Amino acid sequence: MKINKVVIPAAGWGTRFLPATKAMPKEMLPIVDKPVIQYVVEEAVESGIKDVIIVTGWQKRAIEDHFDHSFELEKHLEAQGKEKELKQIRDIAQLANFIYIRQKGKFYGNAVPILSAESAVGNEPFAVMWGDEFIGANPPRLAQMLEAYEKHKGTIISAVRIESEDQLSRYGIAETEPVENNVFKIKRIVEKPLPSEAPSNLATHGAYILPPEIFGIIKGLDPGKDGEIWLVDAVNELIKQGFPVYGCEIENGKYYDTGNKIEYLKTVVEFALSHPDFNGEFKKYLKNLKL
Image 1 (tube, rainbow, N blue to C red):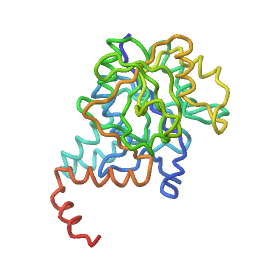
Image 2 (tube, rainbow, N blue to C red):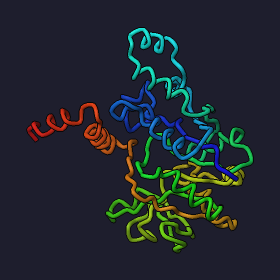
Image 3 (cartoon, helix red, strand yellow):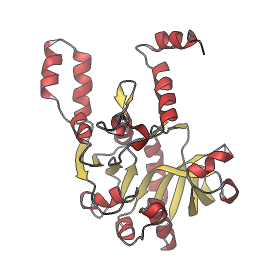
Image 4 (cartoon, rainbow, N blue to C red):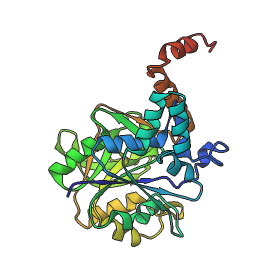
């Protein structure tokens, strides 16, 4: 089946960015002039996704407002003759068909918001992308994954190589066997292993194409590490039940972990340096800093 829907979990508290995220969703933190989650949505749309399902919480209304029309602002911009800005905000509301669901459940963990989206997804395969991080790639990461899905018809997980051994314990690391080019069959995923226990340096990370059977598996999971329900446990159960699971190593891509303070700051600087409106002035400013 063609993949038409993406689930974007965006219900977390954003505690790593407090106090900034006390009243503002972490997914709305700006990368120069666009919030993080807009980069995620744009990647999905560029990859052919039509329905964007965002799983939110009570404190995340700003996300819904961002992807909606703002008629008063549009009227003001039109009266001011600011056609460029007017087009930008109108285009945001027309990116996709947006569906919002409040996260429910007594447990925490990154599998819980996915289960919350079951009624909107229905009985069809779907994509998952996190709302506070993204990968810049050409072609887009999700487009590369969809190409692998068309060939292999299994669960597809985006994958990146971790070059620094001391960083392996930050990710789920896959034990794999090669299939073709940048596609690997996954035997199991070891979540945040010690470097000495990592089965490879291929991190399964950031985006997924999942079958609808994942919902039943998540429902049957017992709480794992820290008493939470983890997606990696559900994927490992998929493998045990005989579902083929593949890692798609993303080509021509760079991972931006904007849920991490220092990586967020690096991302803002990098994107500012490539911004066509002021990259020259910003570069000059940085060169003149006394570091």
